Length: 477
Image (cartoon, rainbow, N blue to C red; front, side):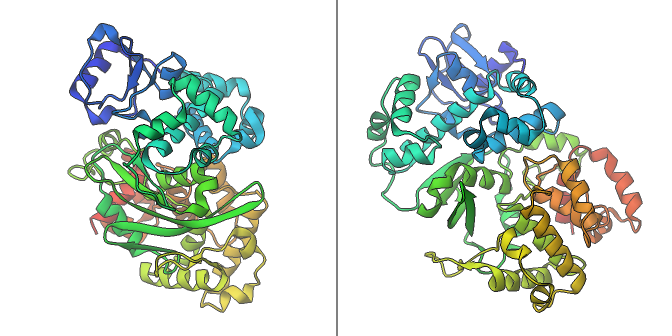
């Protein structure tokens, strides 16, 4: 990534939030690196070096600013092929793929050579994949030390380190202080709790109210709820053959361009993937102005609209099948029945959260009659079974790290999944920004078109952001 020093300095001087996460500023006179929105005293241009990532700044010997906290900077999502590969790699790292299988295992999941991955990583972040992952673990640890009261040992393991000794040594080497000193400096700022809260940044504008309204209208009773500006849901993730279940709560962080995410104790062993999925669900890596520019006026006045993602791609896919040719309310009723019948009970502090949505393995073992007994027509029951078996067997991957074209092809090959269902799943489960369900009734109505092919032709002007165009079209109904 090429950075023009003069342009970067002007953005830094203006504290322009649109550039937050796009670059980082290393100050040679202090040895500290900052976000471009940092409110500390502005250094002279001759003392500034600019880096495409926090990892690149740390590799150059700079340590993170304690004021602007680079670990809270938003990420950056894109659709260019090389950058899409990097984004997929980063997501898989967040899921623990690098720790589980090393660089070769990561590359096997991505279908590329290690040499190619290193090349595109160097181009985007100025650093190798392994060094990038190491910095991400350290920055998450720094966030946990600053924003929670978790014991240092728990911080180390929650951040992805397999050894407390390794964590202590690397933290002291990189940040020139032991973890306990940073924890002491933050003492009193975070209340003791079994459910620590963390902040995840975004680039403004951000229409959180609109996103919560979308999620709330589709919330599956027992699994998720939206109340008082807070989104809550149950979560289950598997790691190394063990299931970890718990709950999360997400709302606006007071006075900041960030969401506050509360995570229950049961999910701490899988904290990095939980946070990665929250980021996907709430589209926190979005660059709203770049997307608005690409929508040719469709987003004017509503640049903060986001693309709702998913905490669980399989769950969204099942709900999409249940929602075929029925109203949102009817789809929600069927999803509630499905979760109540086949999900697992979970104790939480919230009356609205009682159930974990069933895993693909559980659904794949069901009979057609068991699903149909809930009021699901036979064709859709067969589609759900085929979907569950494809996901269980690894023939279909429903996450933003998957190649969208490959996943779309696999979805279309399943019985009972047509273009609308495939494109909707691509929008939400895959996070594919160019997905476009052109046969959707609401899309055609908003465009004033009766013909789906004509709607598809008109959407060409919005490439590669057609999924965002869908959200704006639905907003106008």
